[in-house]
Image (cartoon, rainbow, N blue to C red; front, top):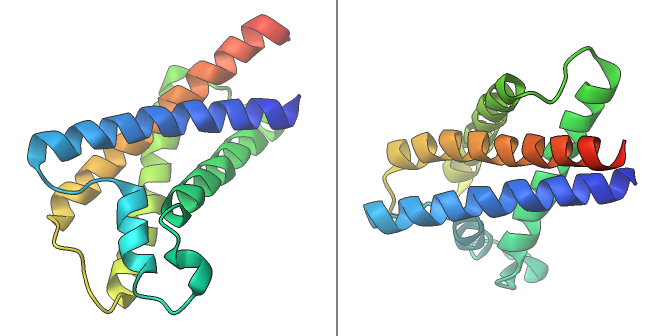
Length: 147
């Protein structure tokens, strides 16, 4: 049941986050799609497996699953519960972690994408709050339906 819960939460959070990022990309005409940016960075490496256009999506979903596992560990080992305020703060913390990761990846890249980095990072922070809201929404649904 735990695996199903983690996968359902990750899927919901990532779909909502990706939809939000897609909207921001369309509105601002600037790439804010994490899988596309991952593929841009992967294309600069000599690692064959990363040249597949699906690699960015796979890595994006895998990182989402890792965030959900971390959320679950916190919810199951502390007094912190999956509430809406928790979703906000988990999203902010996850977003800051994401910004740190992207900053490192962009700094070591041979070629930087032609994007507005400040705008991308602001969107990334909000997108992670959207992700965490999706995770908490799914957690609360499962709690009501199956526990």
